[in-house]
Image (cartoon, rainbow over all chains, first blue to last red; front, side, top):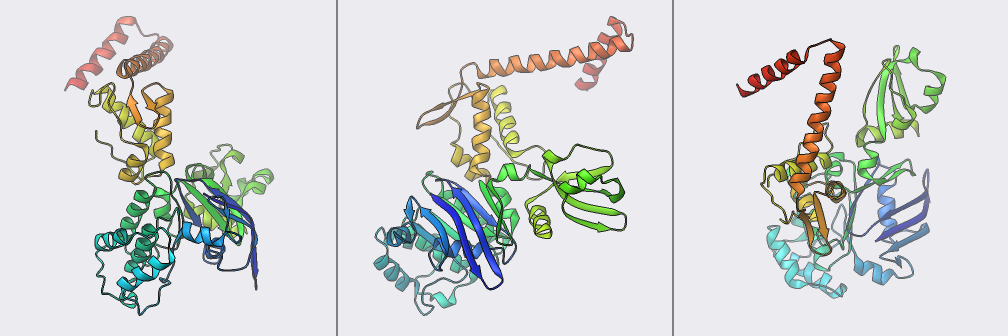
Amino acid sequence: MLDITNLCKKYNGFELDHISFQLPKGFIMGLVGKNGAGKSTTIKSIMNMLDFQGEILVNGYDNIRCEKQVKQTVGVVVDQPFFPTIFTLEQVEKYAGAFYENWGKDAYYKLLSKFGRLPKKKVSELSRGMGVKLQLAVALSHKAKLLLLDEPTSGLDPVARDELMDILMEYIQDGENSVLFSTHISADLEKIADYVTVLSSGKLFYTGEKDILMEKYAIIKGNYKNVSGELEQNLIGTRKYGDSFEAMILKEKYTASDAFQTENAKIDDILIYAERSA
Amino acid sequence: MVIVIKNNSNVPIYDQIKNQILDAIMSGEIKEGECLPSIRGLARDLKVSVITTTKAYNDLETAGYIFAVQGKGYYVSERSNEILYEKLLEEIESHFDQAILISKKAALKETDLIAILQNLLKQEER
């Protein structure tokens, strides 16, 4: 569904460095990394909102050469709805209906009432959560095959976040649609994401199944004096305090020892230690 | 069938799903030939990833408890509870083997070993 190869982008003091990943049809992928790791740049590149090097295919179509087809296929949820703020939700319907070939007016109004929105409201009057839902209603009403969400859960309360997770799970039910959402709230991700792509300072740290990532690393703690030279080479993002240390390590590179305490690294841990070592 | 997930458990979620389906098969709550929830529907209901429910179903299928019908979904296999029953018997036997081995180390008499078992059973009843 989404196929990114060697995506590169340079700004002042920032570089997205040869990012490649695939998202198959029917699954949800979380895109994680700290602020400035390159999440939004990746999503904007897919939407062809900025110049980039590399190749991005959506449903097999190149997103630059076949921009029209791709725009019809993709639904987007960003920080601020990209409709004029003076529009009412009825006007949004007409605007979107004119743009999208597969537009479903009934579907739009059905979703709005399901989400509890009043058609006479203006875009400017929407709260953050309502803005997210409006964009979802538009994306679902034009039968988007790929949903891109940039930080959809930041600024949402736990109830609204849970509702969003429900909507996304419903969206992938027929196995034809895919979701890519960037977030730094790992709780959302740890639940429903099938795949995870971790960016760290513009580089690809991991891409693949979430369950595999969550079994891949351990946090190791103990007395630093007990760390052998060989072990030290495998430690990621070591932090020392007094005689003690904590670090992350690939489980396959570590043989259990009584000298250290270990526990499974969660996605938050992986972000922190990966960033520290970058 | 009731399936509930503990998010902060050491048991992986796919194992939790698997175990609860096996419990339902063993108790007869779901019967031979009965249709299971769809992989995607179950993922939605439990709010877990599709890959997780797929893995649980794949494991159950490989072990012969359920089977897939193309385009329709997953069903409980014929004899699934017999297979499970056999599995459980094997498990009991291997634990008894262990106990026998240990009792030999402790030079326990056969009657004493049986007495221990009977005692434990009595405690269990209470």
